[in-house]
Every structure is written in structure tokens, then in C-alpha cells.
Length: 150
Image (cartoon, rainbow, N blue to C red; front, side, top):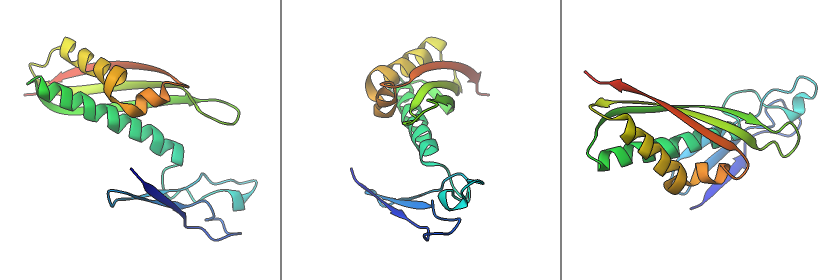
């Protein structure tokens, strides 16, 4: 796997913290820094997600992918899956994630709570590289709700 990240800003301007990532699979992801009122040259323009937001989003995508795949392989009639992530970070550098909570909403027909709980556990214990890696610095907790599809 590879990725090239390029700075898009111009030194001395307010847009000095924009970056474009080009992934090995041929996709592009834009990132930007938060505006810095005290030192505008050190901040971004808030035009895209922060790099750490993309890390959190990647973890959510990784685990949701696993949950859907595990449920489908178990022949469960899953119709939708979303995960809302909330996090806390360390106060000092490096400001790693220290707590992450993932709340899954799984929609399906006749999907049991036990099947969803098992899929989430399998993702977090075995398959999701992102959450397993983040679990080295963060306490990761999960919850879920089931929505019966009509």
C-alpha cells in the first residue's frame, strides 16, 4: 500500500496547511488544518477534514466494512450500517486518541442482536487493522442499535 501526500499551500499565506493525498488505488483525499487566529500562517482555511479526522473516519469505515461483511457471510439480511464515532485526544503532543466510542446502527430484516454483537467483536478483535492499531493508545468502546427494515 502506498500514498503520496503533497502540500498545496504557499508559504506565508493563510492556506499554508492544505494537503492532497493520492492513494495507491488512484483516489484523492483533501485535508486542511484548522484556522489559527493567533498565527494565521500556521493554520488552514477549514476547507477539508483535518488529518486526524480522516484517521477517525478511516477507522469507522474499516470496522463498518467488517460488520457488514461478517453479517452478510452469516446470511443475515442486513440493509444498512452506520457508525458514529466520538473521541477524546491527549492534551499534550503527541495528541493521540485516548478514547474512542463507536455507536453502530444496523438496519436489517430479522437480524439478531447476538449476530451484530458478534460481528462488532470480530471486527475489533481480529479483522479491523485501524481499530486494533488505534487500540494501542485509545480505550475503544462500542454500542449498537438494531432497526428492523420494513
